[in-house]
Image 1 (cartoon, helix red, strand yellow):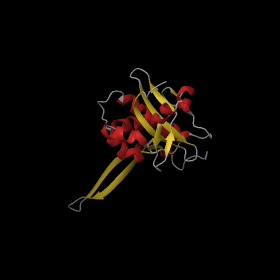
Image 2 (cartoon, helix red, strand yellow):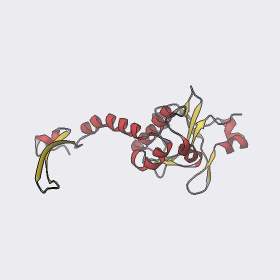
Image 3 (tube, rainbow, N blue to C red):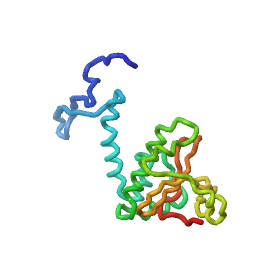
Image 4 (cartoon, helix red, strand yellow):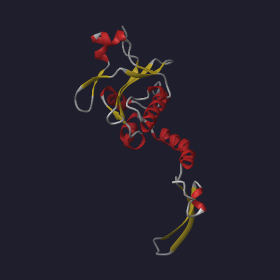
Length: 192
């Protein structure tokens, strides 16, 4: 690190390369193209906004989210009611844009997660744990308990809030895996 590149072209975020290939008639075709590369953090920063836009445009339905989560949201694990909700949602649903932004933010926060506890405050929307009233009420607590991929029920007290449309996204950070399970997306769950 810190060494000068072997060629000044490595300082640029786009590399110009010559591609030579044989076409169907076995004729040599030569073209010069530019390809993005990321040899330093400045290059990555330059592409980040566009990559995020491309990711959001690709997530056009709940099924697309589930099908491409390992590509676009690899730090998230969808479990519980979120699986059912996403399988029937599309971009016309109330709160769709908020939900997509929140999922992307959860994923991105996970990629930078270094401490032992999840940094909830870094998510792009208001998040909080459930109140003590919910915690102490068995019925309300049960409505926030979801089946995880191992078949076990778990209480998901942390939730992202969309206040205008009264939506919630309940999630559970996994401190060992440094991933987040998304267990519920939908209307605000019952209160005391």
